[in-house]
Length: 81
Image (cartoon, rainbow, N blue to C red; front, side):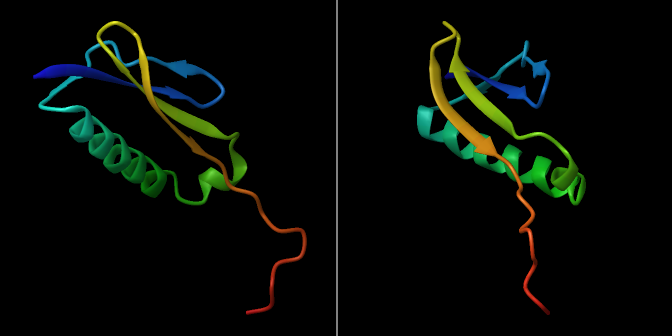
């Protein structure tokens, strides 16, 4: 098992001080995507008003392994429904 850390940046830095023990790097990637999905779902329309944010996955040495970037941009003239 290796420990991975999932830090968030959304205008402020929210470090993951605890980390998560996972069997492999691929499991860490999967966990990052699942966690980001939950965060996006919870944010809902608030995502439209906020600044871009990102999740960074690092190992126990602080080495960056993955960055997921998220933002929402409203079109100037939305398409008619």
